[in-house]
Length: 191
Ligand SMILES: Cc1cc2nc3c(=O)[nH]c(=O)nc-3n(C[C@H](O)[C@H](O)[C@H](O)COP(=O)(O)O)c2cc1C
Image (cartoon, rainbow, N blue to C red; front, top):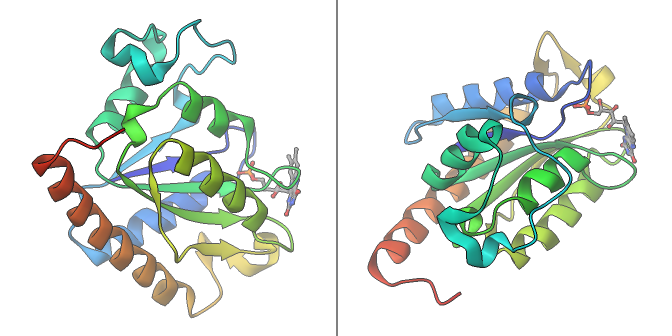
């Protein structure tokens, strides 16, 4: 499973949330976990002429994107950790999504969001819409952290219910990961 840190901003909070989520996933068990930081990848805004939907492995991605692409290829489940920027998700995340296509197909994606009053929920609504277009399966139970500046301390959310919500998200993600892995292995997805 790959946990994606969606923000790349200087001074960002994303790695704190991702690290807490990774700890919950390790506790949960049943996942091989890689935390993938988009700040470590080269993700140009200018895309090649062809679509990654049809180009397959010959899609001309920059060398600095190779590790990101290989993690997305290998993953059988994703957790996207996203803040909310102007009622949506960061451009870094959109660019990373758009450089790929088959990497998302018939795989489950769960969301952990954070931000101001809305806790990143506007960002997640947009992500659900976009990832459905890429044939991903979005997970019903997300985790949203409103006003994280006052509701997190020392890398932990203060809400005592947060670990329970994380467990529900991880249970659903594990269920879908197993179901979709078996389905992909038995019948080619009719994309
Ligand atoms: C460009 C920008 C736009 C933002 N817009 C929103 C917003 O619409 N809603 C919200 O709840 N927070 C908004 N925020 C506050 C962010 O949620 C907060 O800064 C958060 O820390 C950003 O995540 P990051 O630290 O991982 O970059 C915005 C922040 C930035 C930088």
